[in-house]
Length: 320
Ligand code: DGY
Figure (cartoon, rainbow, N blue to C red):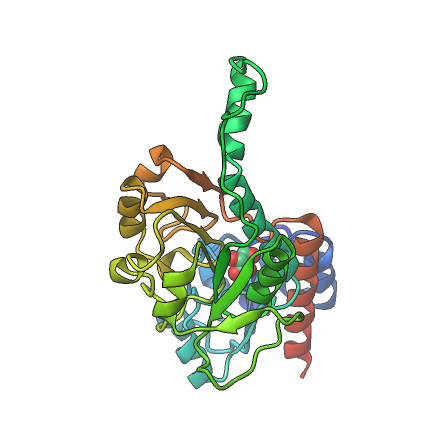
């Protein structure tokens, strides 16, 4: 617990309680401003003891907090999460108690959109199989029909969500020649600026019917949980590709798996799963998949920027 006891701080006086260090110097700097900062693993006894005095918590997306946790934190003013997603936090309880939530919106947009594109191109150009063939030593040289993939130019990409990441992904697939359509929860009326004049908003069912590629870029909320159920997934065109860099809970993984085995879904690229890191073992042997371990924001630059934004937000909340 690297800050604990440095200045003789007792667990009774913890003001900032973090479950992990973050990438870059920012949490150390925060510790210089608030010597009553303690880093202790989530749910460890030190962490539990720190809750009584904590005014700020810093948590990771893999560590869900509950309303019962908040009951143990009478002094809590702010929760900072090292993520843009806040679905692991008791949002309504925080609101009713006046506890601020600080997330990392804005700084992981490009990194996540890049990874979604990586998944898409890896799938459609069969990168996994090509790599495996080369490494196997069995590659016999160029052949007219070796590992033919699927071209994307002229095809349609459906995007769920019109937030910064969805829009950044839209610009990327537009640049490779795809037609872009999107759906969001806001309703038809609100115009969305995609930066380039590319995207048409469609009702969800219509969007699904037209999407040769479907990429998820919406948060996991009560509205989007299980949104892509069997019935909705059935609307996708035969052979559609599905990309998820948002949250696993938005789609019905079992239904996706079945449609993939039937060939109705042409390929699936996943960076997120319903029960991370405990994947349904069927994914490990499923055909036409690219599976990554929740790497959307995982660049050095992005993780540093996230840490800075988070620590600045915590400091500001404590000082005002
Ligand atoms: C987030 O920020 O919510 C991503 O899932 C991880 O960076």
